[in-house]
Length: 231
Ligand code: SAM
Image (cartoon, rainbow, N blue to C red):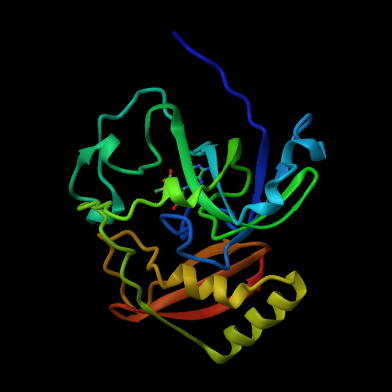
């Protein structure tokens, strides 16, 4: 038996590639995007009342991780990428039906568009449904998760003087909190756990329309090298 679903909209996000996206929502409050709704949901009727809600659940497709053959076990980055656990005990992107869910902040609502922050979604992510976050039902006081019991540890992020000036200037041009976005995302240490980078190794990622480069001058510390308009 199979069912078909169709997107109700697509996210236009600060994240242009999977690398360096936080592993869960809320970890980078400066990560912003707009959910653009498709007809008929771009009609104001579909979002009437949503201005009374601070956060929403988004149900979406991991459209860049869809696979034909379901995996039973996965190796979550959270466990260092070398320990496998059952797919249903993780929030891995490779999963049956490729469905993701994130609680995100709703900053502004207008017919056809929802402005979001604290997102962990790639640009172009197809959204299947939106539901209001209901604090009394969705927040479970006694809940625990022994695989992921707290937010990932953060590492220090420092800047080359020139890189910080570049970031401020692009932030102004984009009217986006770009400096905070870079600091919040890089502090999660996006590099795969098994890579032990030498200080010479440069890493890069695209946020909005800028390419950000950094290195690890010493273990556990990031230095941003430049923030340049993407070529
Ligand atoms: N909060 C969601 C959940 O629990 O279902 C997503 C968790 S998943 C571990 C987060 C990662 O999904 C991000 O770090 C990013 O690399 C990846 N991701 C985000 N949007 C994606 C998409 N549309 N396709 C494939 N991977 C995506």
